[in-house]
Length: 361
Ligand code: PEP
Ligand code: MN
Image (cartoon, rainbow, N blue to C red; front, side, top):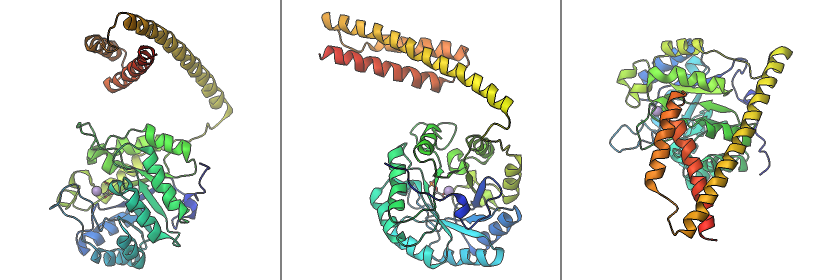
C-alpha cells in the first residue's frame, strides 16, 4: 500500500513550537466542578489540550461508564473559560455526532474500539466531510495490521489529520506495567507509516503514576511526537483509573524533568562516530546470521537422523534444558529473562519448522 498522505501536527489547532505536544486531563469527566478544576490546573501547567472521557469503555459493567452527553457542555465551558483545545473518546456514530455538535476539537478512538473494524468503519462514516484531528489508540491485542487498518479506514473518508496513540497491549500474565508496551510494534508502525505522528500514553501503559516518567522519557528517546497523560486534581478519588492519574502540578514537574534529545547528530564528529559504531553493529548482525545458519544446518542434520530413526521432532526434555541453560548464561551476561526467552523460542521454532519440512518430504 502506498504511503498515506497524513498532515503533520502543524496542521492541528495547537501551537507546535514545543515538543512534545501534550494532551492531559482526567480519565473521565465526573462532575462539572471536577472538570473545571482539572482544566484550570492543566492550563496553569502550560498544557494546550484538555482530555476527558465522556463515554467510558469499562472492562466490567457496574463500574463508572461515563457521565454521557451532559459532560460535553462542561468541555464547552473549558474551551470558553480557559481557551483550551478539547479532546474526547468516541466509540460509535452517535458519539461522533454529539461530540462534533458540541464543538469538541480532537477525537480519539479507544483501544477496545480499534479492535473492531465494524465499529471503526461506523465512526469513519460518521466523520466523512469533517477534517477533525483523530487519534487512534492501538488495539488491546498486539496486532499492527488492525491498528493500521483503523487508520486507513479514517483516511479513506478524507481525514488527513491523524495520529496514533501507543497505550500498550493487554496481557494475561501480570507484568510490571498494566499494559505491555511492546515497543517494536509502534516502531514498525512508524516505519510503515512514516508521516503518522505517534503519541505515547504512559497512563494506560503503566497503570501506576510512579512509573509514568520512565515511560514518557522512553517515548521521547524514541522520537514520539506527543504525550497523552491522565491528570486529576484528587487522583485517589477519581471514579476511574485512580492509581494512574497525577495532579496537574505533578504532571508539570514530570514534563519539566523530561530530557529531550535530538533525533539527528548535531555535528560531523558525532555523525562519524555513530557511523563507525553502526558499522560494528552491522558486522555483528552479519556474524549472528552466519552463526544461525550453521546452527540450522546441524538442526537439519538432526532432522534427517530423527526421520531415519522414526523419532518425533520435539523432545520436551531436551528443549527444556536448552532454555534453562541459556537463561542461566544469559542472566550472567546481563540479558533480561524476557529477551532470552523470546530469542530462544524463535530459534527453536525455526528449527522445528525446518525439521518438520524434512520429516514430511
Ligand atoms: C482512556 O484513554 O481513557 C481509555 C479508555 O484508554 P484505552 O482505550 O487506552 O483503554
Ligand atoms: Mn483511563
